[in-house]
Image 1 (tube, rainbow, N blue to C red):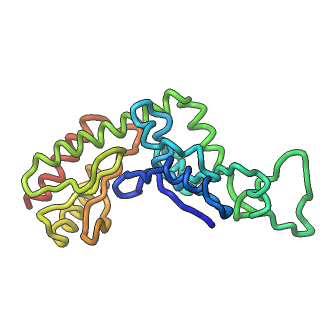
Image 2: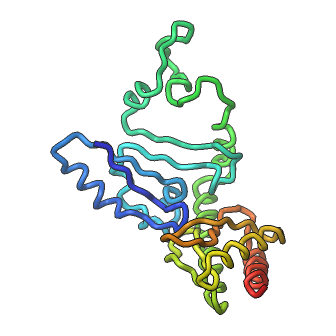
Image 3: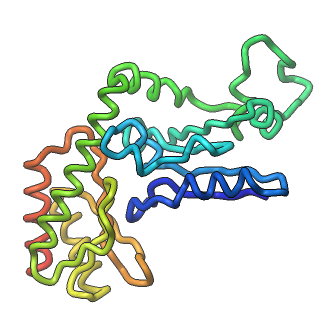
Length: 235
């Protein structure tokens, strides 16, 4: 049995009850594997103010997260962490005759779907080396605070609804309770170039998705983005 839980929904930033799920999996009478998708939310563990959101992630058998989101590395830099290294290796090892056999140093191609690939891990190493634990924690916390400020300012605009509980760095926003208007607002904001939200479907309706994760975002960026959104909403 494979159980998948989520740490930080990619739209609204919400978390499954990870500890309760992990304990239930451990109590299962059947063999079970708990995987946690933490593309955004796994990084909450480094922030003292957000750490509780990810309580229980340590009970998982595997995690996945992204460096190309909060750590701002180039695209397609994903991270998989597996408690059982041999299970990880058996999953991906090809075993072709022309490939090296067992070596003292792990072969990268024994741990990913691709045999030939660029060194994605270098950008991740460089980001972690530069930021350190405190720097990553500051980046996460700063992004979440900006998301809260975004939400507060947008809620003050007539006809604007922030649809999610803003617990991380994600906002789901709807305009005038109207799909077409919401799509038009989002398109106009993108065209203006102040910020780059996207359209998503949230609980069956169209919504603007805002994800605050750029390391350089500051209060002025939030203010200018809210003004651009307000202009587009007003028409």
